[in-house]
Length: 67
Image (cartoon, rainbow, N blue to C red; front, top):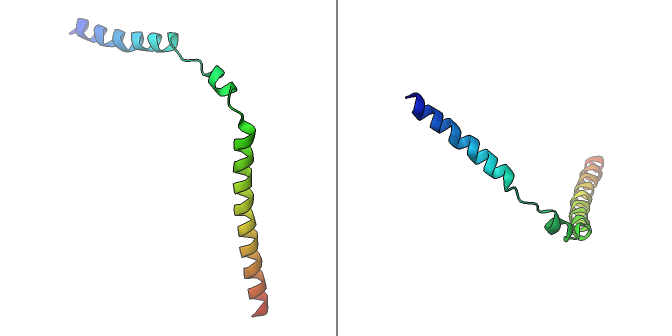
């Protein structure tokens, strides 16, 4: 029984060593991407959503003050 458990413990340890030894380096792929356009697009969408929310709040304020 002890031999069986020691073999089971060795298997995950060896998988961990193999995974860390062959870890992929994606810096060449990520450095080739221009993130400024993606960030600008996300900021534009966030600005549109914020604008809609401000207009909606303003409409509620105006309609509330008319009552």
